[in-house]
Image (cartoon, rainbow, N blue to C red):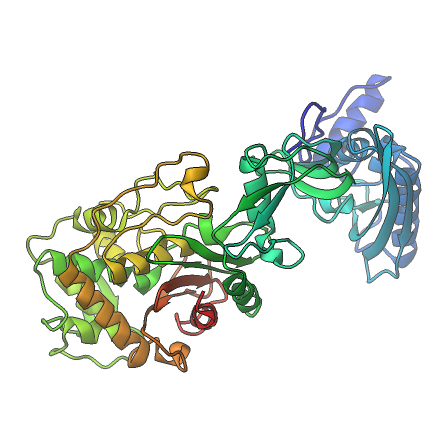
Length: 544
């Protein structure tokens, strides 16, 4: 992270009265209407429809010429948000210290124009060349009819998003050399998905790791408080070494696995210690959903629900858990997956491995269960929902609220108000198969004296039943296809979760193989074994 420099914020809209009242009033109206503040090239007759080829060429040529020469206000006048554009274009020169800019446009694709930028970053007697590619779109101004650059922060640099800016200066935190559990270096180039994680580790542990800061061009994420993203190093600092729990082989498998499915995340942990072996995301927004995601986990939640039923004496693995076509809870009707045959004689193991929703719905009304029973099970035995995990970076601890009404039933099958991340569900599996809650961590608590979260864990009899039901699910149930070919002691649970506004259900899957547990979520959709299942299986196959 950098310090001591004025920051230009993207996204705000304002206007300043300059000169005569008529000119100032025009700028205010045009800025708020999204038409840009410039007046060059406004024809007497307002044009409509998409900009033509000549307009696209003329607008981009004028915009690029002004940008290259450092005329930020003039360049901004060719956009549909001149206030925001001028702020960021000014920061490009003044705060990021980028000079000698040369922009080369590529062949337009309709109203979209790709281009390459070559420049120099010069600061405190040090300089380095900078080059990158981006693209912009030309649109029709709403009120003037002018052809204008559709303003987005990515116009200036593809890494920029809303409320981001560019800054060059001495870093506030030294660089780190993050290494895995085997001592090998972890880099963004080798493990691209680890980029946000490595940035977060540097932000938190850069000084403790013992390095010295350098000079960098960075993206400053002012809006969400995220750590700076380095783009270019002008003067190398001395990195401090930071040892993590990451297994390079598991991380490589996780990186490759999530590439197969859009909007997917996975975490692997070592159940006997809580060490995080892998964390990977395939997302367009750079969000570390593997650690920070908050989504309904679907039927993977049935691991906790089954533990609640067993711990409270409602039933057991070989006890009754009938699976009818439908189950009604307080006027709401719950159904099973299409094509599931009812089985009134099913045991809990049968209903668990087939992921029968109605069996779990019918059992949550049994005494001594209350509205708070699932919450207590999650908090007391699985360490969830208390906002006290200390993983080494920002993470979500899960949420299983005590509720009444239909959401109590929905929570038992991982819907309603229940929320989890892949990290949470990997930990749930680890607790289920060992009986001990060991809070996951990415950096040893000994480094900075963190106090890991605590929970009482599970009775050995509950563990034996949960583990066996997960084994049956992996070999004979809904997870069998995804887990096929894996040797050793294996177990799993599938899940799919409906999310408001999404056409497809999210795919969830959690499983174990010997002393590695993993969980994945994919917004690509389908049943748990369709997208999330292959991701988890690929990570388990490495053996950690």
